[in-house]
Image (cartoon, rainbow, N blue to C red; front, side, top):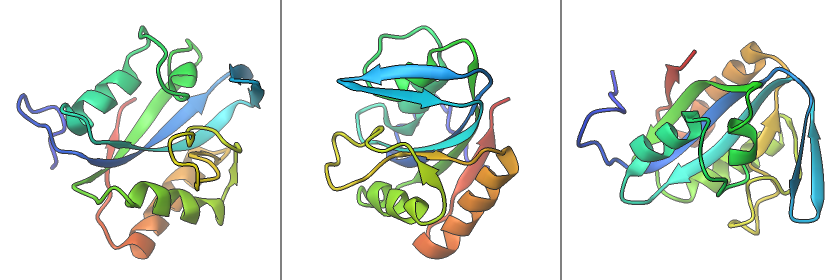
Length: 155
């Protein structure tokens, strides 16, 4: 099993978060307001900094944090939870956009969310409604991208 939280682990790569929202959530990013209904969502991200996947995932799970990325506005609220982390350790940087493009064909999405640093991407936040739909969709990605995806259940 892949141990994300090993002391010296600084592996970089791409990840997906399955996030549950239990109450309606309205967030503002720049001049856009987003209303997210209760349900399950997939967020696509990458970790290329010195702390790698370990640091990035630990940040997403933490509730008390300075808001830096769009996703922080979701993961910092008390009625949201990261349920599953899906890791693609060592995946090339372009996989983040490739996965987002593939998910556009499979799921509804929140336009412009989480993709401001990737202008060519339409979104990095996708609506699943159910947890099983999220898992099913992520499993189907492995066939498309030809890279193993390691799921880790958080809650």
